[in-house]
Amino acid sequence: MFDNLTARLSQTAATLRGRGRITDENIAETLREVRMALLEADVALPVVKRFIEAVRARAIGADVQQSLTPGQVFVGILHAELVALMGGAAAGFTLRAQPPFVVLLAGLQGAGKTTTAAKLARWLIDAQKKRVLLVSTDVRRPAAILQLERLAAQVGAGFHAADPGMPPAQIAAEALAQAKRELADVLIVDTAGRLHVDQALMDEVRDIDRAIGAHERLFVVDAMAGQDAVNAASAFGAALELTGVILTKADGDARGGVALSVREVTGKPIVFVGTGEKTEALEPFDPERMATRILGMGDVVALVQQVQKQVDTDEAQRLAKKVAQGKGFDFNDLRSQLEQLLKMGGLAAVMDKLPAHLARGAANAPADRDVRRQIAIINSMTRRERRHPAVIDGSRRRRIAGGAGVQVQDVNRLLKQFQEMQRMMKSMKGGRLQRLLGGLKGGRPPGFL
Image (cartoon, rainbow, N blue to C red; front, side):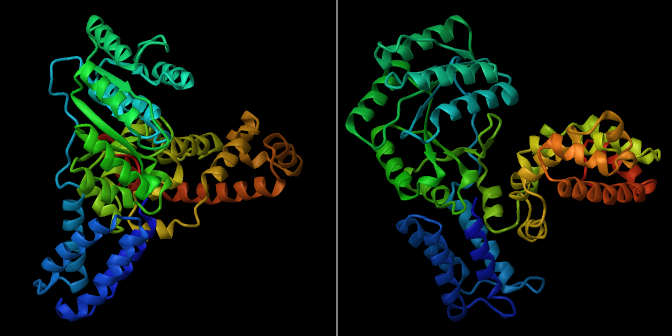
């Protein structure tokens, strides 16, 4: 997300390097570049105009401290105004009412409401330790009801099964009654979508809201929908008293303009961002950290949190001890590391949180499909071959390639990479690895020395 905008803003800030002071003259061209970068990112024109004027007002004549350059000062101003544009301090998501706490999800068809309902349920179950009940009121699409029922089972949430012939508002009311009977902490109501905003959709959503008295009314918007998403946000905001926004499919949009527009258009905070297809791919939205990512500074905090949550620390510590004791690094160890990388969403998800200069340095890293191919090659080996790679000769390489459905050259390439990793692991014996183990005991995630 924000790939194009990040590249443009980084180049723009660089044009101020070497200047002694930010002035009206030398910032005029810079602001024109910022304006073009935002418009190319599909940010709504009124939002761009207000943002540019806010940056200009702060930048003209800004003091440049001796330890800073004009470019650094300008980046600081951009960061502060981006944070303000996206809502200032993180809004958070607190269950501040007597249970069951009712969350209503609204939005257009295809925005990802059903998947988002399951993701939100999983976040509430895992992070907040809440009992969650899900219900779908999309009576026009029985497949949507079945999809949510299956997702509820997958994430460990309850599900209210209803007759599709009933009015949506009645289904929601009966789900609320079930939530009270079963002492659920949260009821999440997934509503029907439309291909476009119409009066029938708005009336139905309002009827459901009146029937259940939702505490949170969240607008689910597709980050890749561009200006259509902004228009839909405005229409829903006028028809329903929204309390917040969930931005979906953020991992598939290189522009990111919707994230910068929807807060300004609706006047409501973005509370969550969907960052992938898996049910765990939902993050609380933090404007300050998002602004940092937009400016190419990465989001190391999010990366550390992801590592702490998804990386098997015991496995990392076992591998570190094994190498420290001089025991060989084998293909079982490599497979474990590759599988943990995929659990974190793959290389693309990790690189998205790295500062821009580090992400560029990792541009030649293997793609996720290559990682899966490497795992398939390792799985095609025998137990002896994984533990003792030296026995893999020409005939074994051909058998491994056939079993994995790849070329012998792919096996040769992996073996060469593995030998290089073995040499690196041998060089880590002693002091460096002991510091790593100390870091693991101190609670830091593996890899952060």
